[in-house]
Amino acid sequence: MFIRDKSSIEPVEWGNGLSYRMLVENDRMGFTLCHTVVKAGTKSKLEYRRHLEACYCISGSGRVEAADGSAGQDVRPGVLYALDQHDAHYLIADPHCDMELISVFNPPLRGDERHNLDSTGFSHY
Image 1 (tube, rainbow, N blue to C red):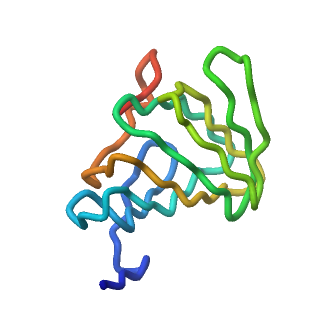
Image 2: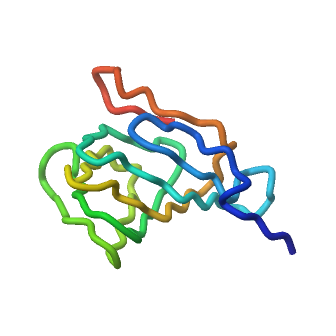
């Protein structure tokens, strides 16, 4: 057993917010667990080509939309969305406050990954 306090973790600036990588590949748990902060008013073009991701909203609100516009869902506390097909998507935080998510990745992240949101395509890792 081990215990980790969020206050002891250096957050990663992932592109439009902060990611506290609570569990990473070196922890040998088989998945990554993050406390993800999405900055208010941001829109991120994201894709995980090597990872599946599930996100559970714990505060704030926003929206997740499929890259092709075929599906969208409001995100608020108590809502989970899962990217089970390596889905390219837009993650949009409402303008009035940050959105906070608990994110799970499989396979696990190394822990230092960052998005490149300046590219013309969907940022991926």
